[in-house]
Image 1: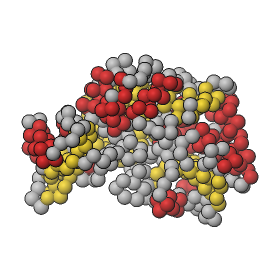
Image 2: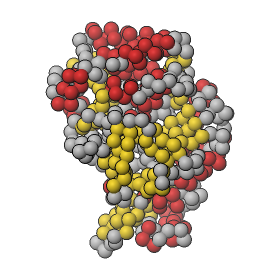
Image 3: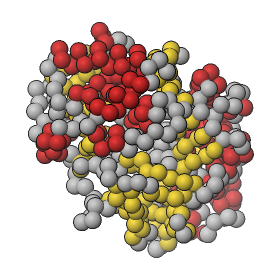
Image 4: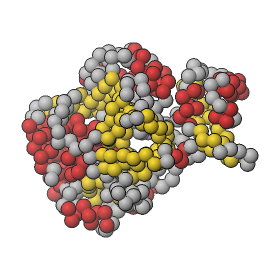
Length: 448
């Protein structure tokens, strides 16, 4: 079921496949590394259907290891380096049977058999179908991480159609659905994936210039950082043709500023979840948040303002939670949306909506206004309990320059009062220069 994918990679021969730490690896070389990984798996008795954690930072070895495990028919659990307690939790939830910790080369990889036997029914389904699997964890910022189980053969199937080979930055890691999608899509088309060890505005722009990157898949949080840094003006980004953004709502002001800063670059909103895969999308325009969703294998429905999606490559289920599918196979994304004809606009998670005396406040709407202020570099809006109104709006802001917090709070309330209904104006304003994002460059916020 996956043989076609590897046969296609062989056809690309000496073309650039992966660039890591400025060293370029051809498809022929990557497949050679994959074969050596196969020998490692043989030596340690790793078979089809085994649940294997692939632990370490993104690298050419990580990519080759992932490919080898797919070819083997194993169930892959990609893990970034984690604190010990979190690592133990995820290994337990996934019932990992073998852990492969990445070294700099095949000779330095460490293999540990855990003594577990993975007996979850979802793994039984994959074994019965003789298909490789993938386990991805949610970021778990509001509780225990959910473990999503996917059929890797179905995922690969969406890349069969040959389109255009492009040079793409591997911004998201392999423990994220976006990182997996970027890797497999890029390789299936004969493109080159450029990976970098450190993701900052300066290093990303330098990589685009040095490696003539054409596609940058990233997050709204990172794009806001890019604009604030001004790094885009310090490098030749002439090769860049497309920026895709997803994983969280995009502030309209950030999108419009990005369009002005990079007028020759197409800006495209993406939508995807670990549970469903990445949907085909079409933005109304480069500076619009309205987007068409769908494409082959996907369908959606709007129910009470919430987006439900049906996908041919949807997860088999969670290892540690019930799956929110209805009888027709639609998945409740929990994302609140607005509809305008064939277009939708993602407002944010239902759990993040703030209820002020019965009135709904979407954090993104308030954040959009706050980010218009030149003193504010980043803003995170959430709800605070109130015995009078149920909740009130609070804002955590990061500043572009030093200022007295009390003065900032007054400026924020005055600015917002001129642009928002009274119940949406932040009652509480806290100044903090800490980053507002996780290692996945996604805004950290508590559920309202």
